[in-house]
Image 1: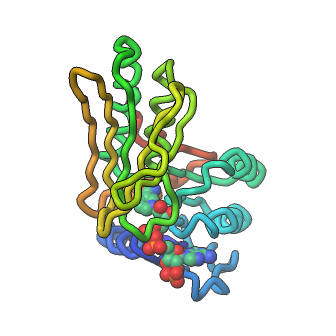
Image 2: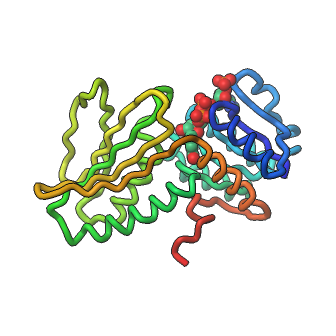
Length: 249
Ligand SMILES: NC(=O)c1ccc[n+]([C@@H]2O[C@H](COP(=O)([O-])OP(=O)(O)OC[C@H]3O[C@@H](n4cnc5c(N)ncnc54)[C@H](OP(=O)(O)O)[C@@H]3O)[C@@H](O)[C@H]2O)c1
């Protein structure tokens, strides 16, 4: 496949290596310094776009992909509030889009088991649940998109929770680390060089159950994004990343 990379930062560069190792060709790379090259004509040289840019640029980049009629894999996080609007646009343009806060296979297994665990914990209301996420200090959004997906998985399956609340912990101290009974608390920590660690914690007076995913590097996210690009070929529509895993069958 011919691939266009929108965003050529930490992720874009690893995606390039993995795509080439899987015999794909990179035909366009866009960063903040060459956005003038982001034209319909250039996009149409690609079979698929992989978008890992910034929360500020992702929406207009997606629109450009729809307008050019090129399928797009969206890994950028921090735009979940605009999801419905983008889904409508996708339908309007008869476009193809797959999006995920985390494309790693391991994290998608984690998402699935997190939901099963939350459902099970309805029977044990004396455990209080909390999510902790740790990322590198350059990360622009907090909480991480992955942590939001985890919290949403809990909210959808644990009857006592309806919302999430985020606390950014700095210098080992959170401003306000309390949450209402119906809220899932997400604690965000920023530590140098951490690619992404997520822990779901069920705590009681008697014991603590911890369910944890640790990314050792960014390769899992990048491979998942390339697999998603391969999966999206010849498909129309708006897909969450779970669509390519099929865990329920
Ligand atoms: N879904 C997943 O599996 C997953 C995994 C990891 C990260 N992410 C998300 O992916 C995004 C990128 O992460 P990263 O670590 O690669 O960030 P990064 O290293 O900061 O890279 C962002 C890139 O976007 C470029 N950019 C700026 N404006 C642009 C525009 N208008 N069009 C296209 N590119 C533009 C930047 O260009 P310059 O270099 O010129 O500034 C930079 O190359 C973040 O939202 C992150 O949370 C998702």
